[in-house]
Length: 180
Image (cartoon, rainbow, N blue to C red; front, side, top):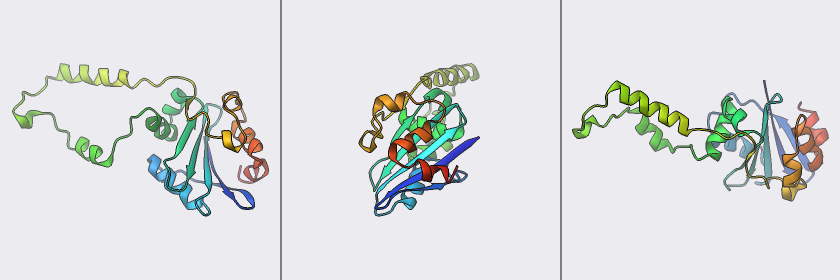
């Protein structure tokens, strides 16, 4: 089970809203969702948590690229929303143009090359899967919350109620609890 919330910084402090991730399929979708919650392009934090397995924080500020932190990349990579974050962190995100080319299922025979035998295809697939190893442990920007009051050391020490502790450190514990 997932919990997701947006914390948007305003002139009056933090505002929290729970959010549904049903329509989120890419990091761009998640970033757009955060930008919609932004007031005057201020900081928006997206909190995503899957029970006690992992949590992630995505920080969006204006039109800058999002900053991402995931507490356990291996655990996150095995879940649908976590996979979006870890793919970006580990450089596996493709441009839309590349995805269109992949959908064509080109096998090289168009250029006069011989077709690959089934055994060789299976061997190639096994190699690519093992190359996608995702390390256990934290991944991403460990300084993501440093200027907001939570150091890298504190972030790395978080465990069971990580999002609550982050919100407490930001002075937003009460507003986060309203959406939990």
